[in-house]
Structure formats: C-alpha cells, structure tokens
Image (tube, rainbow, N blue to C red; front, side):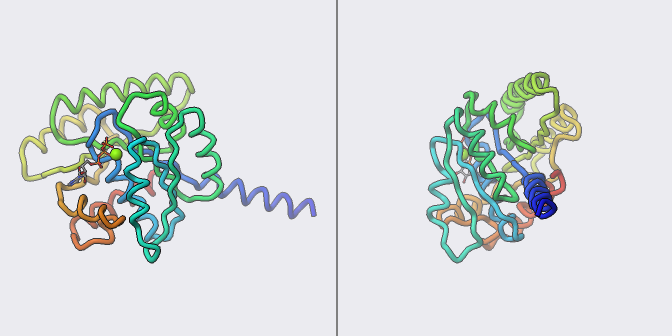
Length: 231
Ligand SMILES: Nc1ncnc2c1ncn2[C@@H]1O[C@H](COP(=O)(O)OP(=O)(O)OP(=O)(O)O)[C@@H](O)[C@H]1O
Ligand SMILES: [Mg+2]
C-alpha cells in the first residue's frame, strides 16, 4: 500500500516537472505577444500536448479568440487571470494538469509582469525590427530581469523572437545582427514574417497552423520546436 502511494506520488512529481510555463512578454504594445501565444498554443495542441493559455492581459484578446474556436479543433483551454495577487496560485493549479501553460502578458510594467517573469520557465520577448526604440524597450525589460535574477539567485531564461521580419530588407538584417550582438545566444533562430494570415485566422479562433499559408505555418512549427527544445 505504502509502495503504491510512493509510485503515485512520483508520477505526480514527474508530471509537474514536465509542465512548461512559457510567457510571451514585452513592455511594448502591438509587438505580437498575443499572436505568438495563440499560434504556439495551436501548434502544440496539434502535436498532442495538453495546452492552456493564461490570458493575463485585461484586454482579454486571447479569451475572445478562444471563444471563437470551434469544438472540432484540437482543444486549448483558457484561463483569464490578470490579478497579480492571484496569478501565482492559478499557475500552481494549472501545473497539475497541462504540458504547456502559455501566458499572454499585458504590455506594461505592472507588478503582474514581474510575477510572470518569476514564474516562467521560458520568457519569449517578441519584438519588431525597428531599431533603437525597440532595443530601448528590451533594455528596460532586461534590467527588470537582471534585478529579479539577483533577487531569487537564479537565471530567468529569456529569448527574443523577431516578428514581422523581412529578411530581404537591409534595415531588418542590420537590426537582427545588432540584436544578436547585444544579446548573444538569446535570439531565437525562428522569426515570424509579416503575413496577413496571422491576423486573418484569429477571426475564427484559429492559428496559422490551421490556415492556408504554408510559410506562416512553417514559421510557427519552427518556433514551437525551439520552445520544446528549450524545455
Ligand atoms: N507576423 C505578423 N504578421 C502580420 N500581422 C501581425 C503579425 N504579428 C502580429 N500581427 C498583427 O499585429 C497586431 C498586433 O499583434 P498582437 O495583438 O499579437 O500584439 P500584442 O503585443 O499582443 O499587442 P497588445 O500589446 O495590444 O496586447 C494584430 O493585429 C496582429 O494580427
Ligand atoms: Mg496582446
């Protein structure tokens, strides 16, 4: 009886260990936090993972998106919680149940952003290839990350993804090179192109994985694979 209890306990521990909490965060609005959250969620759900999106943004765009999703599509659960005094408890509960918890974060420096940074196994920062203005926002976020790392005494895994990337535009290439130089090993190989499909599919609660644009689909598959490999 005691033996059975130990096994059951270990199984729960193992399940907890494989849950990955991935947040999509930036202090800047409109950079693709919601788009990357939703598209990664769809991709992982199609791969057979149990996925929950935690909508921590009071604009509730992910919550509205999931409500448009058809029941025939692979299931993605959604919890909305933008209360900094509760979100840690919500995450703890979700860890019992899901392979991935993906957090769609608000575009602000509110206390909830710090809590999200602290509870994430991986922090993905989407950014647009727009030069100094964009890098200033990252510096602010990284300052916060370094302070939190010093406070808790461990590293917070942060990776950047360049969104609406045009690799045929010189300024975009220059931006990418500068970013890699500033933050070596923190820039994901995957990028998301500037594709209408990303906004089109949201109207029907889908991700580009479920759409017709093969290039967009390949991009989110590559992103999801990189996330899985970082777990
Ligand atoms: N790669 C892309 N190609 C084309 N359109 C995109 C792409 N990524 C995002 N968009 C569009 O840009 C807009 C902003 O994207 P999104 O809502 O994901 O940003 P956000 O960072 O979550 O914004 P907010 O800070 O307001 O929550 C949306 O209309 C979205 O459809
Ligand atoms: Mg958003």
